[in-house]
Image (cartoon, rainbow over all chains, first blue to last red; front, side, top):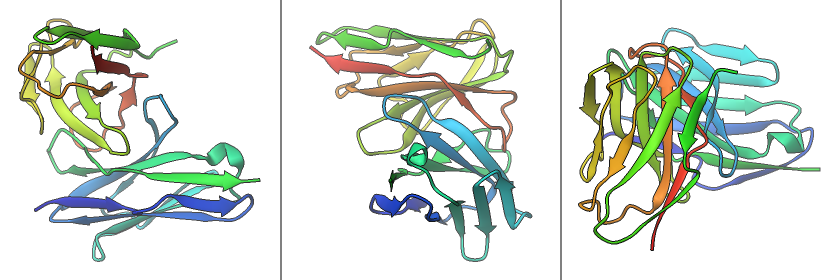
Length: 112
Length: 114
């Protein structure tokens, strides 16, 4: 069966460190992978999209990698700040699916 | 400001009652989506629409209905057939319905049973 797995537990790190979140999938062949941020009681906000033929994408302090052989994406937040504390969701898009499938999310807490 | 507006923010349903959640967007997006989110879980797709007057069932459509009569509006009705409706409901839109389209989300409606 198809499955998307993000870090099974919440991630707690110290301010200034790099947070690394994982998104593993099975029985998907995603053409695109997206990352979203969700704050409590709010809707998700789009952060980054990476295509299957791209290895890495960056946006300010954020970096995403996509390894279709390992069936894994890594999401890095460098020089983390308490304001980065949120739940981060990965979403997979198969080619021509017209819809995304979301993981359960990982809650990141950055402590001052 | 362009965006997606969901209303109401909180909604209470009595047993046997249908309720309708509103979703309006002024982004001129073709595609719209409804998701359900339960505590500590990700988003599960209920229905989606890639164009006006057309929509498809998502993964958990049973007990729900939608309409797409206008490009900017995609209301969701939670029917009495949905036995466990308590959840956080999120509406989203994207430029087109194809793959690789970032979605813009509203701030959700929290539905509870009285």
